[in-house]
Length: 85
Image 1 (cartoon, helix red, strand yellow):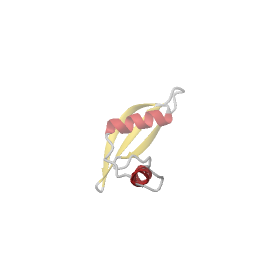
Image 2: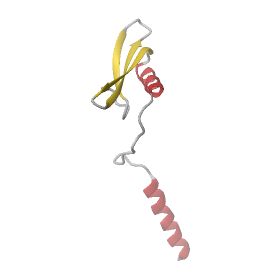
Image 3: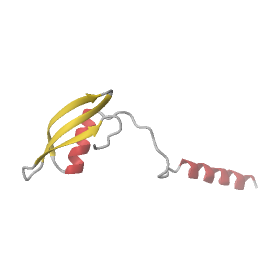
Image 4: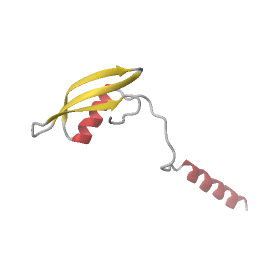
């Protein structure tokens, strides 16, 4: 009986430790380097210019990208959570 109790406790612990989609993990602010790597991978383009902008206490990174076909565009990344604005 003791073995069953320990096995059941282990199963509950493992299930409780399994992440689910409803759990949000607080994240640290994103560095400029992290933002550049994230955007380059997502858009398959090279960041050719990067600036930090602050607006009312909010920081964001303004990144200019260049893709292999020569298209240039700008992406703004929220420095606090990494979301693309």
